Image (cartoon, rainbow, N blue to C red; front, side, top):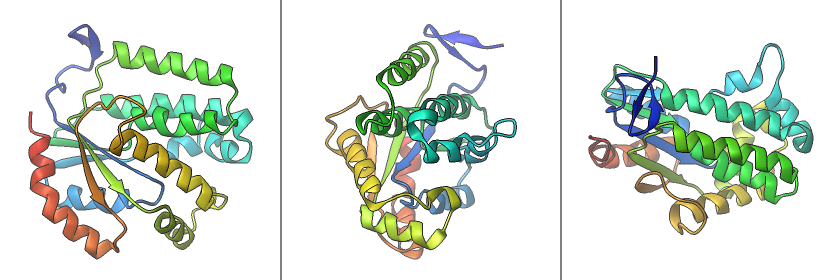
Length: 228
């Protein structure tokens, strides 16, 4: 049963575990970073629950959203919000918890883009915003550090073409540029939405070997920032 901590709902026994959130554009190199820290530290990695987004009792809301975002954007993003909340409240025996993206970027980046681009009706945006505001007001969602993999949209576009994931076939360079600007406004310029934690920016245009060297260089700083 959940207990209340400072007036917010929270799962028992896990509120002191440090939480690092890994943020970045599509194909910014999040998987490489998560794999590095899961191998080298007492870190439990929580990836985005993409498999759930592809199969909700036999339905694929992720594919539906890419096909018709105005019709299915609310459906997918409601489920994204739920599954990301589940990730935030999941417990671990590891010393540190590291998450791929967060409930915050789901709202501030991807829902915001759907709305600004005219692909999400205002009423759908209002409903999602009400849910988000209730969750962040009433549920404890601690974040100790945001690691932002800052990647040029052209680099992301090239990587997308190389990895050939089915749902990503229609992602354009223009879309990646918009997502990049939303991330920059939030985490670098800090002109759009509140930050739930301090931000460490790591330039991430390099190849996997170069990026592993950067994670090694920043490892102590990242893990130290996450200490309670």
